Image 1: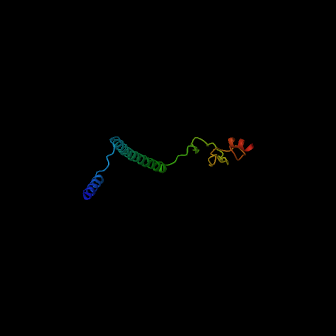
Image 2: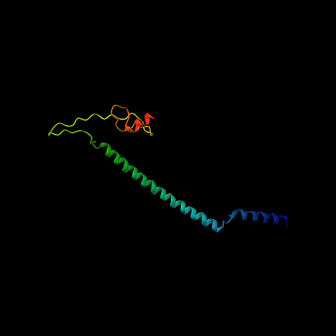
Image 3: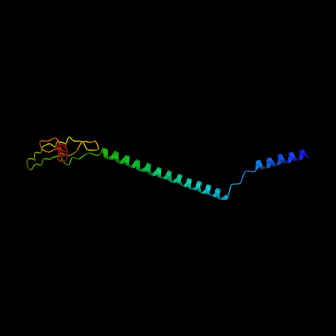
Length: 124
């Protein structure tokens, strides 16, 4: 009798170890929807990365073509054969630095080191 009880316990333990616990269907459906959503997001990310790479290539090509174009100086004085050209004083740049740390691009007031804007600031 003891042998039959032990044998039944061993068989019962073996059967319970072989069958995996059954997950609730709601949880399984939620996990499936999350996997589907993640797969869709991965494909969107890869499409976005491809678009970004295409835009970067186009910008690099455009930058390269802009750097190789000849520059035109619209402020350059050209002389006509009709008469003498006006003599312009050379423009002197303002000595002040902007808030971003770059040098001011405006021309100075006659006899000073700064443009009108920065001359007011340096007087105070």
